[in-house]
Amino acid sequence: MPFHSYIFFDAEPSIHSLPAGKLASAKAKFATVAARGKNTRIQSYSTLGFKAGTRFALNINAVSPEAIQALVSDLLHTGLGKHLKLPYTLFGMTRSSQYSPNRPPKEADWNLPHRYLVVYPFTKTIEWHLMPYEKRREIMKAHVDVGRKHSEKISQRLLYAYGVDDHEFIVSYQMDDLEAFQTLVMEMRETESRCHTKNDLPIFTCIHMPLKEALNTI
Image 1 (tube, rainbow, N blue to C red):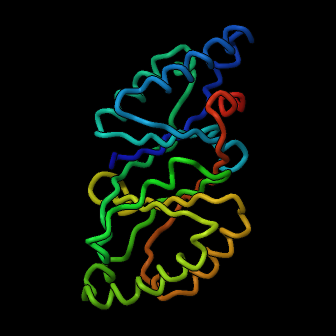
Image 2 (cartoon, rainbow, N blue to C red; image 1 turned 135 degrees about the vertical axis):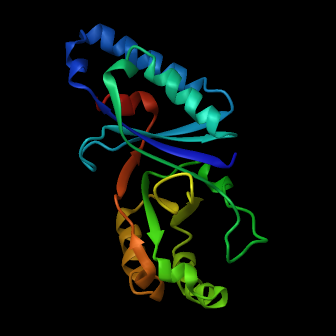
């Protein structure tokens, strides 16, 4: 399933008007609807305290963009959804790398999520895209080599967002050790590819948990 969307949720002030029992019932219904999405699979995360204006997030993986939209629509039409808002969304597709076109996108190791997820969009400079392909490939090799050195502890997924979102890429990392991930980022900052990054914000740090638990952050 090549289509991915990261949907970040926050609560509207109106949610505080719901009695405790009704709120608990609304959360349970929301989780049930999420689990029944057609042609989709989801992972849920808490973002409370890590990104202002967000409480929890869903990574929706689907066979089509329409399947993602249908699931989000169903969620927002639940009793809980009426009291939620979407401060951020990120949308992209998996595809073979420009620099390793014969290698299929890596997906299998994301079926069992790690404790933490860090996701952010990024865009390269115009000068980067005008650079000869072989030169870009050489620069990216050094960048990829750093990632491979940490691949036993950190798993990466790259989504292409050219033309379908505000950014060119969405990069996601899964890990059980945030310090190990921070080390990876610091080492990547020292590669030449960093010179050709136009923007790589905002950064979302998330904790994986069952959706029913994530909903308790509301």
